[in-house]
Structures are given as structure tokens and as C-alpha cells.
Amino acid sequence: GVQTCALPISDNTRSGGFLVVIEVSCATADGAVTKLLAGSGQVPPSQTVAIVDAFNDPNAESDLAVYRAQFGLPACTTANGCFRKVSQTGSTTSLPTTNAGWATEISLDLDMVSAVCPSCNVLLVEANSANFSDLGTAVGYAATRPGVAAISNSYGGSDSAQTSAYNHSGIAITASTGDAGYGVGGGNRVAFG
Image 1: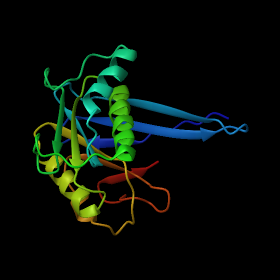
Image 2: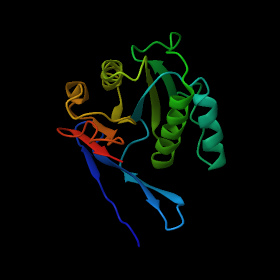
Image 3: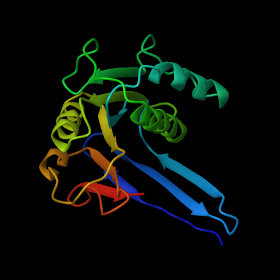
Image 4: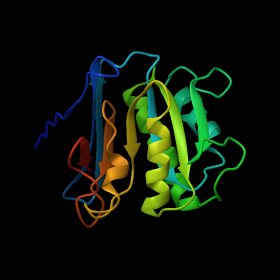
């Protein structure tokens, strides 16, 4: 069958528009998984999508360059001001330890933001650990950066886990539903996945 999804995330106070991001995984009868991604909206090029993940991906920028070149997207680098990678406190030199599993997640997140909004700036905020206290600190840092219109969180947890860290007026905040539970949905947060 055919699946149609639409999930508008209003952001009238910061970007004057909206950003729609939908990722759907469908398993076919033979077990193959198809991922569909759709994006649209009115996010001006000066707007930034922040991605919050745990640990460091030392190859984030170079992997992003490969993806964007493969699909004919404009370069998004530190040098041209499109890409920036920081720790949960904003440091560009004191980054968390590397974790291969989270590095794969970071690369996927960077690729999908590029697919949905190729003209957006990208801010990668790497939390010190996968604990909600560190992830929440990273979200808080991202929310203070000028131009951030959306913050993507690719992790889930219980609904009661540090939800106050995810309340930032005027910023679309998304989180995965996780494998067991409903993520950090509610309020001005949207949980999906």
C-alpha cells in the first residue's frame, strides 16, 4: 500500500514559516526495509537546524561532504559557515569522547537534515554522554544560538525524563519515539519515529 504522512511543525516566531520532516520505515513481505523521507517548508537559508546527539563523531564534516557531493547538494562546511560542530557547552576544541555507534547516528542525522533542507545551516551539538542531563544541556545550548529554527534529537526515553530541557518557545523540537516508549513528546515537542 501507499502511505502518506504530513506533520507540520509551526515555527512562526523564529522563521516565519514551517518545517516538515517525516521519516517512515516500511518493512515489505520479504523483510526489506524502505525508508522514505519527505521535507518541505519555508525555512530561509539563514536559519539553522541543530542536531543533538551523544559523543563525538570525528568524521562528521567529511562524511557530510561525501553525502552532499553524492546527491549534488551545495557544500556545507565549517569554512563556508554552513556547518559547525561543538560540545554541549559550545567548545570547538574540547569535544566528547568518540563512540562508533553514535557516530553512525550522527552521520545519518546530518544526511537527513541535508536532504530535507539543503540550504539550511547545520549546528551539530555533541553531548558528553547519552544521559538525559548531558543531552538536555546540549539542547539548551542549541536553543540559545541565533538562527536556530529547529532542534533534532535522535534518541528516546520516558516522557518524564528531563522534559523541561526540551521546552524552548519558538523552536521546533523533535525527538524519536525510541524503541520502547514515546520519547520526549508533548508540549512544544514532537515525538515521531
